[in-house]
Image 1 (tube, each protein chain N blue to C red):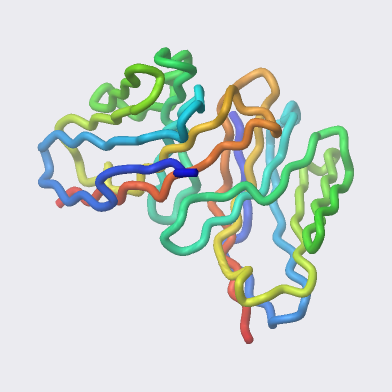
Image 2: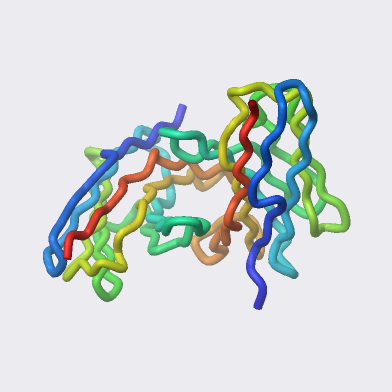
Length: 116
Length: 111
């Protein structure tokens, strides 16, 4: 079956512009996660959704970052007034439920964001 | 807070064993994971271990956990060129959904 998909695969934007990154989880997966992978850094947890609600937004770096999920499926991560330090690969993952070893996180290929 | 550390790079010859090491700081970690990321692809869960286990073996993969030293290792036997990838160590505290990842170790397999 189809895996997690993300769009666009690459995005180049000018500093100060807003961007929207999209994640399509695996059908039936109720949990959805966003991570950021910066050059030379590990994966940084941003936010997770259980259904449409986001119980933990603690990882969002600033109030310029927001995310939503509608219909328990597609999620968008929005970055307003982008800065150069926002340049990174943004990864989305989904799982059948809350993360336990039996509920493996399946990762998408990521969106590479470059802010010029 | 949680922190996971691992070396950046490891080079081995095809057919040798690879050992990738990881240390973590959260003594209440419940689950520890190894993920593999091939070029241009997303992360793939390789294996995991519960914190009450010392060792787990899965075909060519052996995970060793030293909970006292908060040290986790992944051994890949008979390393193949297809094993070339970045390997991420990660930990999760049972009460929380956040998974903390290390920086990733790039494994290079020399034919």
